[in-house]
Amino acid sequence: MAAKDEKTRRAAWQPATQLVHEGTLRSSFGETSEAIFVNSGYVYDSAEQAEARFRGDEDGYVYSRYANPTVSMFEARMCALEGAEAARGTASGMAAVAASLLCHLKAGDHVVSARALFGSCRYVVEDLLPRYGITSTLIDGRDLAAWEAAVQSNTRAFFFETPTNPVLELVDIEAVTAIARKAGALTIVDNVFATPLGQRPIALGADIVVYSATKHIDGQGRCLGGVVLGPAEFIDESLHTFLKHTGPSLSPFNAWVMLKGLETLPLRVARHNETAAKIADFLGERHEVARVFYPGRGDHPQHELAKRQMKDGGPMVAFEVKGGKAAAFEIMNALEIFRISNNLGDAKSLATHPATTTHQRLTDETRAELGIFDNTVRLSIGLEDAGDLGADLDQALTSAKG
Ligand SMILES: *Cc1c(COP(=O)(O)O)cnc(C)c1O
Image (cartoon, rainbow, N blue to C red; front, top):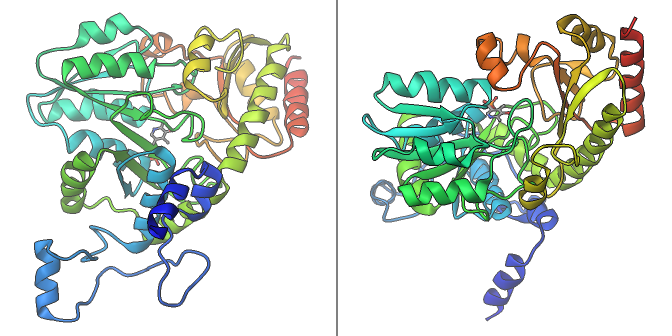
């Protein structure tokens, strides 16, 4: 009875509480903070116990490529936050994306994907999967009719991110997952740009959610990591088998950094998002800026959808400067607090020129299709003071216009 009451109370916890306590496995030493289990293997009390573990008759750890207590804590905490049945940590966000697709698909299958994707995700869908006989169709993810029209009898997965990188277009999670379900396909959502606190794809109907934990989950630019969340059947069987035998395991140390990151995630994301909204409004007022992209602003073409599926506008802002590449470079080079980087989701504010870095590989034509031009700049808003960030942009815009 007492145990049941505790379970009920736990289920009612808000994210801020879950992210401090869920998943903690205390060792016999009773440590307060989570321990880092830096071990590759495990020992058994007897040969019989080893046999039972390998048969699956007894729960317990066998080898850290399959599972590790620190990694398990991270996975359990992410499950509680996301409202998912199961999860697996991975060595990076790309390992999470690649594994979630490859564990489910085989030669002869077909994937429909939004064309606006993080660069490496686009490579996996467009170039890598076809090498293994898995065909893909890339479409404008904003266009529901295009999702519907791309479905084939062998379509087994839909893949997209929302908001998209870098110009923050949105995909209607509820509507697209309904099309996938009708087609018998699994929906996999890369939820990095919204963060787990800003958008809940599983509640909106998605089957699988993937993260690069490298971004806001770590949030301080330290470690690579990823996570895949979804139904127990998919995670514990298809994905687990794939990961176990191919080996992109999350290191226990990185899992521990991510666990600590999760404790402060609500505080950090609230600050990132609040500042991002202010920066977007600041840029919207500037005559040096041609266009601002921010889902939280009324001038975003999909603002109504943003209000439906996102908690707020998110931590990323993009804008087009008046002029071309030279003007964009001049502004970026003049920034003092914002640092130039292709990374995102850090305590440090970062500025990216997508056309020459993250999306350099694409042709001018494909970039134009994605809304990426020579004057597009992406900002990952950090944890600095919003006034200081505004002043930095102000001096950069002002000094660059001469
Ligand atoms: C960074 C990122 C990835 C890849 O994650 P890594 O941890 O760098 O491997 C995938 N999708 C999105 C949207 C990202 O921002």
